[in-house]
Image (cartoon, rainbow, N blue to C red; front, side):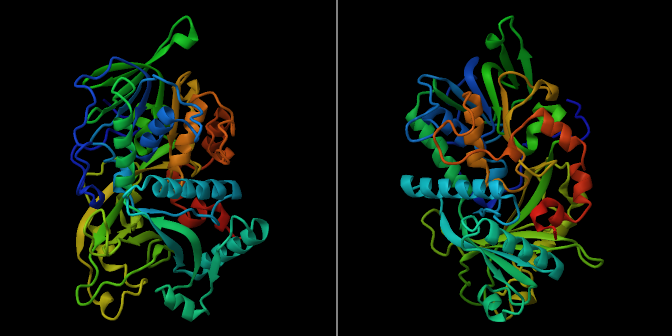
Length: 495
């Protein structure tokens, strides 16, 4: 098909090899619950990452412990263009860290609820995904950006102490604390107590395997290597009897409802959203610790942030360390280090292919973890060896917030089409409960009616008014040309 300007194509058939996908589930690889694609379904979910998997989970098992929203016998078909969870979730940075002081209080509360939901589920179900509670450390490399972050954190501590619980501001004068955090030469840091590292693919694999074990193919049907290539609304004189036709290379399927859990690829199926959710490619490396000594054991999830200068690009890099002793996979204490998008071709904007790694970004990631991170004497003398290097496609939202809800006719949607996408590189603290709220909308429930103690932030709700408002502002490309950090997180702007 001929793509419109900014429209995403289909996922690459031969993606770069992600660290997280080195030992995929034997149950899920090549899985098709039925040899042939079902001709009909009550619900089709497109995309099998964290949003798609948890959407199917909530559709089949309900929205709370009482099973609110579950419908006995309902058929749910989950379509995946490649192998299950081989998209952004299987290619991300491996951490779940709410950004409590860089967002509005309602968004911060939602991200914290998302974090606690996953944490509690992993513990309750004993999911072997290497979930480890860590401290989130935001290390600022430029003084002006740190001062903006510190001022924002101070305001949040005064206005919403429950949300800001455990928030620590480490000023550059506190050299001892910065050294303890292993970032001695930075301009300051904000420390968050609620963060985690995990193996994201293993979490999603557990959810999908559990659904396959719990329901027959007539109720939950997973079809991998089956890309959805187009959507068509087949109208009936009775609106409730209208269907969506989902076209794939293996045939078509008719459904009363379709949920797009497609993030950066959303515009491929809804071209009118090409300017609203833009594909952006990021790059990550699994770096081996310095080999001259025992690897350091870091108990933090790091973000390294700086503003652009005349001599250096902006930085929004992130890093977690794999555990030295993992029940999931033998680990070497690898540093999962991503970012350096300022060096990528066109900053990765409008790039929907994840089949290559860029040499300039690769070189930066190998050589620029230490410093700012202190890995011990001599660690900064030479680049670290990369065990894996890969890319993944994020969905950047025009107003930086996810889009969750019914897709209106003005965007090429209509009755029965829904979306949960556009996480702007911040999906792990948002996607599970965004999927939950999308299913609430599909079930016709109003905010809060499912009986849980969290609600979708108003900033995330899809509406025609929101579409009109964001189209009156900067495009994603225009916003990215400005100060990336202050544009991305308005809470950091000096007020």
